[in-house]
Length: 70
Image (cartoon, rainbow, N blue to C red; front, side, top):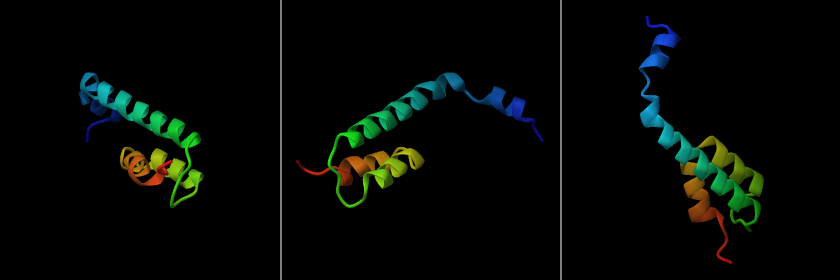
């Protein structure tokens, strides 16, 4: 078996870094928008939990379903 250090050395961090930065930026955007928005279907704390736990699906669901039209 390969050690964790060997596995970490094989990960292409230069290729994954932009994806990780975009994912974190999307989460932050959704949470900031959630803080100042009226929501539908679920309480704000549930939307926040969904955004944090199931990135990016939770954020997309919030943006499509959770925000009220006004």
